[in-house]
Length: 96
Image (cartoon, rainbow, N blue to C red; front, top):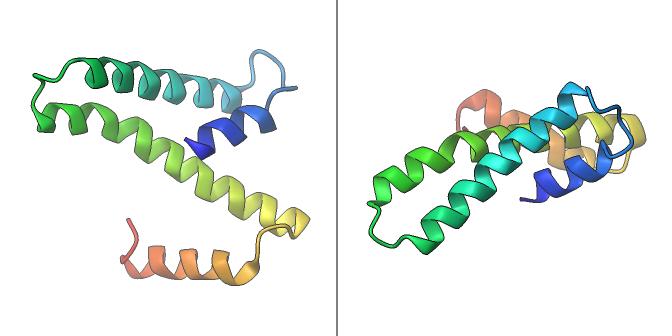
């Protein structure tokens, strides 16, 4: 959710046809729609719930990590040891 919120704030002044902003909107609407539906319907099995929420959660998580990495290297606002540790965990297969 943080990646969605900060991503939409980050791209708020972009053109309407901006692909990154469109991606945030697409994955965010998907996540919020299914999250609201599944929170109200308690008779849906857990596997269906997770299968429907996995794609937007994965996409927004990936965008958040990439955006933090790019913004951190450009502005220096994200601590480098943290980014280095995330890259190390991803390359070793411990963080998927």
